[in-house]
Structure formats: C-alpha cells, structure tokens
Image (tube, rainbow, N blue to C red):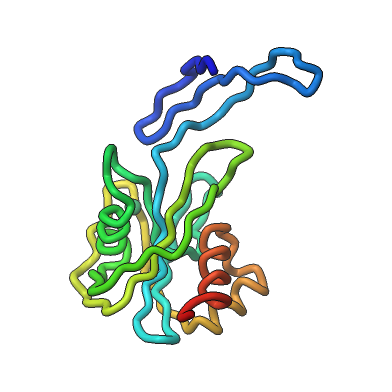
Length: 171
Ligand SMILES: [Mg+2]
C-alpha cells in the first residue's frame, strides 16, 4: 500500500493511496491520515449536559457541539479527553469513562473518534487555544434530543454520542 504524501498539515496528512477497482485496475484515492480524536459528553447531573457553541471556519458559522479534539502525538485518548474537557468547557471531571468509538468520516479519513462520558464536574476555567472561539452552554438531555430532532444540533459526532447516551447510558 504505497502512500504518496500530497500535503502535511499541522494535525493530519493528505495522501494519495494505491487501491484497486473491482475489475482489478490500479487507481488512487485521496485519504486524510489522522491521529484520532476524542469527544466528551460532560454531565452536570443525571439530566444536564454541557455543550459548546463552536465557531467553525469550515462552515463559516458556529455549531452546537460536544467538546472534542485531536489527539496530540502519542497522547492516550483518556488524557486527551480530560485536556479537551478543561480547555473547551472549563470543567475538570472526577470521573471520565469510555463510552464507544467510531469512524467519523470513513469516506475521507481514517480518523477514529473515542467517546467519553465525564461526571463529577468541577469548574476550573476555560483554556482556549488561540484559534478557538467557544461559548459554553448547558441543556437538559431532553432539550438536546429536541435540538437533534429539529436540526439545531447539526454536528454528527454530537448527534451520535447524545443518541448513544440516551439509548444506552446508565446501563
Ligand atoms: Mg480543542
């Protein structure tokens, strides 16, 4: 599997990867090679969730999301989850537990996203990175589900993890 590097970004690399068509012909596909990422569901109590309003350069406006971020080199997902939770929401957590993991966009990238639930929250103050514009908001889980249903929450990882928690959480 020969990869040709097309572009090396600060967090991921765009490569052209050798592949074969069903007829066996050689072809190449562009793939974003990604170190992996985390998403965190922070629970203030059994029914209240911390969300963020995150300005996204890619879509030109703010989206309502769960806190998330890219793994630093060799960073274990659990450490990244704690770091991103503090940076983006201003809460540290007494307990962080792994929920599930999934491929976030396998048509484009090998990025695997690790989902965590964070509890026993304690405010310690946001530590935003230079390029982040994030406002924290709190909603009940039932408000989150309404916002998924009516399209106010449009971010796929947040939809997936909130629905996962609504279906399987606490079991
Ligand atoms: Mg971040």
